[in-house]
View 1 (cartoon, rainbow, N blue to C red):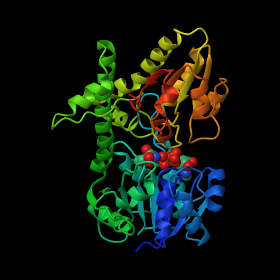
View 2 (view 1 turned 135 degrees about the vertical axis):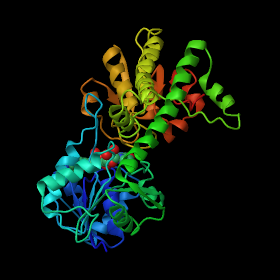
View 3 (view 1 turned 45 degrees about the horizontal axis):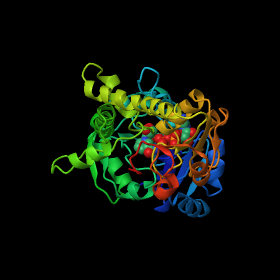
View 4 (view 1 turned 45 degrees about the vertical axis):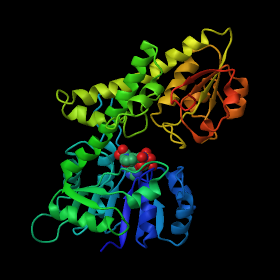
Length: 410
Ligand SMILES: NC(=O)c1ccc[n+]([C@@H]2O[C@H](COP(=O)([O-])OP(=O)(O)OC[C@H]3O[C@@H](n4cnc5c(N)ncnc54)[C@H](O)[C@@H]3O)[C@@H](O)[C@H]2O)c1
């Protein structure tokens, strides 16, 4: 029975998860090292943009089911949803997981459940357990007789923009340190889950999440490589893919400006780092996708060279459509490179943010509206397929040079 849950890390994953648990009547303590985020959450608002999250938070904060703070508290279950970026050598940086487990160590009791939701390389859940037991040698992991604590990995696979729906509807993979641990974690998730739970061991669950994102990355790399090949062979890649997809067993994805975000562009590296000599295809896919922003920059520079003093508008900065998240965004990367390499006016349009990130504002780049950009620019660089851009009437861009990396205007 889980009457209380402590969620550590209140970002894009942890905050919606905390709110969904609180909605079921569970007493939730949300923990984050970011004091400003904690204050915002306790005022009933989200510090991140996610559809319907503000409304849900307002309800669960005002009825007292969710309280945010900067230090952990005792609970029946702990969920860890802290960042897991990669280091310069592409190995996973588990320092946030280590800090999180050490911060909850004084509060854990035998009988408690600890679930690691952060995306991690194979073996990381075992490491987390080792860090916990190093800090608390009195604790015993479940598996044998008697009271013990339970530990599992349950990777998150929600889509930004649909998080509150997918948190409840998606199936979950639960990898226990032991079978008993996986079953215990299943009981926790079934308090709100409509999807199925599939139980396995922690290593398989860790690798399953990485494989899902590596699968996407490899398929996107294929589309991106086709776009590079098509450019060289003077073929319209959008037409090419549309035609090839008429085959009943072919489904090529759409190319883009590169792959961004904190999942698909990061997680495959954890596999490459674990088995560098074997994960050849996965590494190459990462390299193809990472090379894409540079080719877009070069294409825009070639277009700009045809003008005396052009104005360039970069449409979209986020890493995917209709969200405000600029982390590891190829669109942001391209815009930054263009503003440092082109000696001309560069406008940025990002309907989902109000101010430019510091690295862009100090380059002199101006954030403006779509209509203003379209009016002023000679070259429109379409980087993100935001709804607002899709709706731009074709007459408005008739006289412009277009570099459309998403194929929405072709
Ligand atoms: N965002 C997604 O769409 C998504 C999807 C699937 C999986 N994931 C994975 O989920 C994990 C979390 O991702 P996110 O997008 O929510 O990250 P995030 O950066 O939005 O949020 C993480 C939060 O953890 C906090 N934090 C860091 N160290 C802490 C500590 N020691 N104690 C308490 N709080 C701490 C940060 O201040 C931040 O608010 C990552 O491993 C990510 O790969 C993310």
